[in-house]
Length: 417
Length: 86
Image (cartoon, rainbow over all chains, first blue to last red; front, top):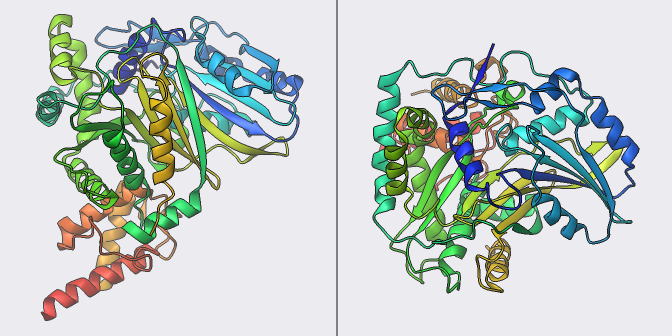
């Protein structure tokens, strides 16, 4: 049975193409597990060598008929997972270097072990064509628990899902109407990214329980995700950055479409979609409460209209539109890029808290961002940690501005009651 | 509407949102234990607004109300009873 692409995989292929000229050569991402106890290269090699051939074929596959009506994933020749080992106390520089190197051709996973004498970082680089962030975590769970195998059943869409034109066109019309308002107003965003510059990262860690309790206490139960989006939106609006013109804030928030019961069958391919959060008409007097209320209201409206599912379905249609019209449509709706910054929150990690009897001290995602928007702010919850990663494109922002934005977000997350 | 009926409808909706079955849900356990995250919780709040007209999207719930599906159905019932009396 063939594994066909869904509408989001089409979007990801576009993002991958947008990153083609960057040093990383594509839109991959890293997941780094930090250990406080020594990890040896031999252990890692053994872990990777235990991967079955059926899975290696899958990891060495590629999209066949990528821009065709019905692209599908074709398994390739099984090859050992490339793995490198370095000793360097400057682990951050090693991570940046690893992120800005291309994956080998038709290879969806490489690994690097950084020995920094007092800490050891096991870093997995995933191709976004085959994995999304939550899927990568499910894969790591399978790998680190010694249960790596190709999941039963078809890992992708079992059909091209095109024989439901009424539904697809209805989704397309609704999506178009929803996105139209964003194309008419100026946004605070990067208007020209450097297509050939690499990415850099800043990270911070918070106590998940503390932030969550502060959010519950001030904004009500189950508000953590909304508060994180509001904090980022507000920080972007207040950001003192001469490279950004004044305007409204658009945060295309990634949402995970996997549900609890589907976890095992949904490791591969992209199972997220978008919910565009948009703030207009704000004033300097509007505190975080106003921003959070806007998020809650919009999330309810977007959930009611099912926009995330429309986005997934409507993108299937893009494959049947002639390239010139496709370009015009994309330009009219995303004229200046992809909003103010990429944003996502993985609210529950599935990666185990230990491996080979050693606790994993932290787990950080390092996504690459395309030249536009050139900036991404990502949160992941892991154990008792809430981890923040900010990615930006080097050379696209004036010196010191990115650090100022990061400090503003960190400071705001010390939520006061 | 009785609290039992509300709980039944609520569990049906949680099963839809989490794509499980009602048999797998634990009515007395937390929403987290029932695999409901903060975004899925908004879907549940939306359902409550559409089904019973109780709007908790912008606030109005306290931690006790969301301790479990049972606690939330109890809160909805008290809102509805309050509305009937007034």
